[in-house]
Image (cartoon, rainbow, N blue to C red; front, side, top):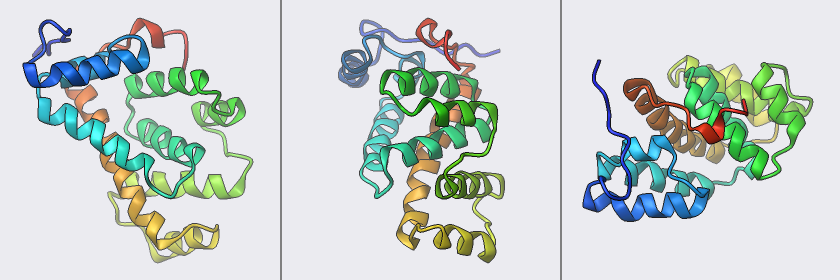
Amino acid sequence: MHKFTIHTLETAPEKSKEMLKQSKDGAGFIPNMHAIMAESPVLLMAYKEMGKLFNETSFTPVEREIIEMTINQVNDCTYCVAAHSYFDRLSNFPEEILSDLLEGKSLENSKLQTLRLFTKNVIDKRGWVSETEIDSFLSAGYSKEQILELMVGVAHKTLSNYVNHIASTPVDKEFESTG
């Protein structure tokens, strides 16, 4: 099995060091996923920039997190589920929504549940969603623009999920008590 390096500020390629410092400043530690991504400064930059762009979409913070956590679960990314659970709790993300997401229960808010199901269908069907699924999404109060913005979240999380699968990223000790 190929082992990927969990870089530190000292061992990371020069072009990744500042990005790892930003990760450490933001989280209080360097998450293992960022430390592994640091092997490729381009990958780490792409991941961080896509995250910033996804934050600029018209989705609310709660909607963005539902999208990302749904993708993490559909892609069976243990690392990202644990990381998101940890950061959700730090940010006071609604605990009832987090619990429902983690337990696979329907969300009480029908609009948010539609978002969750549409996101799941996009991942499961690799984008080949039906007209009926699109109509349902639009009827729930979302827009065509948001269908397209959802692709930024899909690309962002698919990138991290696949890296974690390939690298067998170990879950950080900080994340272990959540999820």
